[in-house]
Image (cartoon, rainbow, N blue to C red; front, side, top):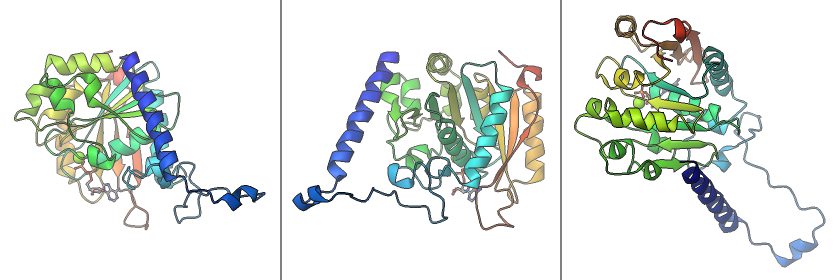
Length: 295
Ligand SMILES: Nc1ncnc2c1ncn2[C@@H]1O[C@H](COP(=O)(O)OP(=O)(O)O)[C@@H](O)[C@H]1O
Ligand SMILES: [Mg+2]
């Protein structure tokens, strides 16, 4: 696994070098005599901030993954707060595998997972893996400009190795496992021993594993994966997720004794402000106090 990651890293560097060579403007001979050539300025984000990693550096990543593109934005700031909260709740863990789910479709699970993974990977010492376990309507490969296959479902069916499924991104320490070919029975695969073994193996390498899943109330996929993880985050979207569904989701999680790490209120205040993607994090309780929590 470690050797495989080294190889991935080497390949990423080679790709970066190639990109630099390919995109470097040809230098006219006269330019060599120019005593002070203007420094290359990354395009700004239009809000006056100078992002330390501007979109220009990650052109293949969807601009909605603000946590990668604009480190100064309020959204990134809020996700950072979520990271801090998670770090404190999970301080004892070397590897933290977290399922991101929500009651229904469109609550923001996928955007929260992508942004959270991006912000976590801002620390170069932290190895982060994003897994698209939404084997019914995967989106992460589109957000990160990656291939959908081979991916998680292919590995779980013995059609690909771990090495073949892990993809690099332009962030050196952020890797992604996309969904793969969509299988007929996702919960069977996600609840299999293969999935357990995969997570066990990945936890040896990654400090954070963020797992995007389908809606909690529609299918069992998220709860099946959550059983193998440190905890689960529930996303609800302001003005969209009906209260009754939030209550049903909470009741279901309590009944199943799954460790809920907290709740993220997505789209908070977007009706009052022009900015989007506002997040609020509410910590439920220490997962170690939750019934059924497994260390
Ligand atoms: N806070 C937000 N502000 C604006 N648009 C959002 C916000 N959160 C999600 N969206 C948009 O809503 C749609 C559904 O979000 P997504 O994360 O795919 O939901 P889910 O994965 O829960 O189905 C996407 O088009 C996404 O860009
Ligand atoms: Mg989704």
